[in-house]
Image (cartoon, rainbow, N blue to C red; front, side, top):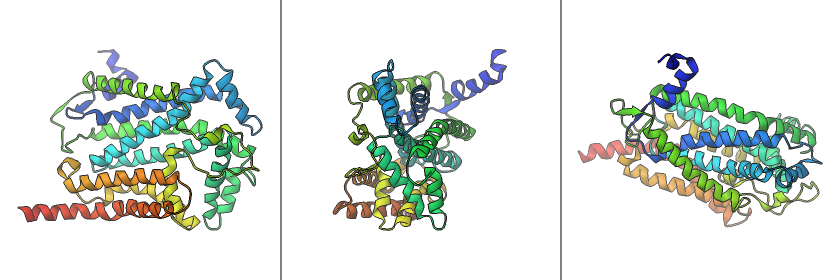
Length: 381
């Protein structure tokens, strides 16, 4: 008992052992825990990789190859970090779509959701600048294309791009800046994650039924800790398949060619987890409009708690919403496919239609759906 009164032990006990958890949550609630494990893996492997990496345009590519070929278990560190980013996004995207399905963005957890969107944005920035560090062809040209988008900002855009580059092209100063930021931002994400967790535990976790479950709760340990550990074992098995058998499956082959500013790749694409947003960017035939649309595609998630129009959280009691939810998921998958295709017909037209539906879903369908459901409920009775 005296040990439980110590501050650190007390915090650990209150949030991981005795924390009251709704008794009816299932394995879809594992993804938050798995996301935290992915973050830990990325931080640990990143620290060890930084010990051997050289952030210089003449040495960066060679240092990455040195890590994979000469450093003891360097290949494991590199593949775990590279594929770990993909695993991180897979888990977080599933976490987000679980939240959309069960209405986790609704009051009183609206700020938990908003902090989660901020974490997603920080992840995207961190992953993008990390993609530049191997200094392959796709690293250089991906950085050139994406950072050039900032020039679309009126008046100050060109000055911001010059500041980002540290000069007048993506070069050594850019690589140094990106390396510094890539090392720093994971710790910012870790801090934001603690805030996210604290905000969640303020009002308690939701549940599949979307109802108040304050009466029917049990402590997190041992039942839910065991479920999380089982989910972690399955995740590690899935992760290991990529590390040991297909470590380059989710990467781009051009990044095994050293960066050459004199040779432009035929088709410049970002990593797969950026492709839906990249498709939205390309769908707007105007540079500034495309940038605004891409940023809005993420920001729109943050305002979701205030634009939805129903008090029923779970889609289990909303058959129309459930149908629309699956069309939305299909739309996101379609955008991901389009983002990896060349900028030509019919891909441009399909991307534009999918982009319109993406915004139509959040800005029109969700605000109206609650009112339609209430009308149908009143009409039925």
